[in-house]
Image 1: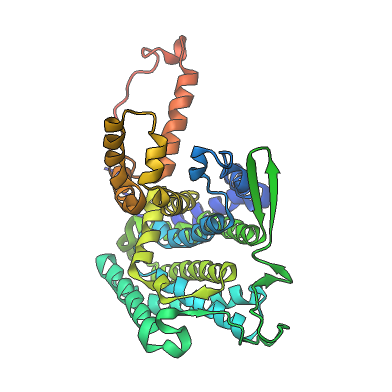
Image 2: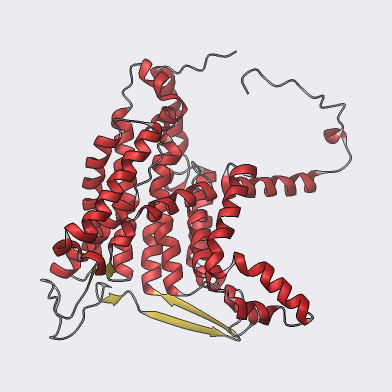
Amino acid sequence: MTDQTQNPPAIATGAQSTVKASRGGMLGLTANDFRLFLIVLVITFLAPFILNPFPEGSALAQFNAGYPDLMQRFVIFGIFAIGFNILFGLTGYLSFGHAAFLGVGSYGAIWMMKLLTLNVIPAIIMAIIVAGIFALMVGYVSLRRSGIYFSILTLAFAQMSYALAYSVLTPITGGETGLQIKNTDRPLLSNIQDGEIGRANLFGLEMRSSFELELGAWLFTFNAGYYIAAVVMLLAFYMSIRLFRSPFGMMLRAVKSNQQRMNYTGLNSKPYTLAAFVISGMYAGLAGGLMVAMDTQVGPERMFWTASGEVVLMAILGGAGTLIGPVLGAGFIKYMENIISKINSTILHEWFFWLPDGLENFVVALIYPFIGKGWHLTLGIMFMAVVIFLPGGLVEGGQRIAGWIKNRRGSGDGPDKDPEHHPKQAPHVGE
């Protein structure tokens, strides 16, 4: 049995090697991390093409997701999930109240737009600051406990925040109806005519500005708001990579591995976990600010506990603790929420019209409970399947497929594949 107790010199040595390795590639990333970042960058900028694989007017156009509102949600909730993964994936602390920071950031952004300027940059900065301060207060109290008690505390804070926004702080939050830009708002640094409703912009470029490209039967939309949010998401993703590979990230992994042993070595884990909590909250605030920048309204429903549960599903489905997993999980859930939920019985009958009437009705009745309003049932089944068969989420599934393909390509005759040349070895103790 090997002694797994870590001491400070060992942690420091590992951290130094991690830093040296990260400095060897482009943008301060290792070759693998830079390749991953490049893949995400290409997919993000080519999303209007990738998400519209079927021609307009075809029966399969229902599955196209390349319209601005949904693409914006993909990247914004990707940021939200990346931030949550910094806390949950690295430290193992499961927060059930992260939507509170999303909502607080949204309120900070909308008030910046209503009072100062409709330029989205100050609004996003304010969202990050307000969410960070709130996360510091919540984290300082919640991190006094761990495990299920920590999760319950974060859930309590989120529900209290929702209740305050919904009814108590109505003059600030707008209550049930929320807040939005009105024709009576006169931001200090924006020139708006009387009776005109101001629009969010980036130095004059409106978030709703779009350009459409028609290629044969295909129609692709390039939206300014999406690409602005995409650039922010790429920066957030890059920063998460650097954080994961930093000595700070290694300390957070030590907390997740065995916090008690870490404390026995003389290292105080509280500052690290609090810093991770605040950074994670700031990511959520950034996502909230971008949501307001894309759609200048905000309501208390963003802080409800179901929104916090959704980001947990995103991280676990994609692969908690991985770099790309939360982004994949966010895209997967938002795709189901916006595409699968729109499929109804009429569309199903159009798909299966070629079947005999009795069989057509049977097939539609069989599929219908899993689509439309029943999309949560499909999501729940897939979530259970991932937890049982793919604990590493979609990332683990991709790795298994890639490994299977690699093995298929590498299969063949020769000494490398002869079992006599590779006798099975007993596993090491502790593996």
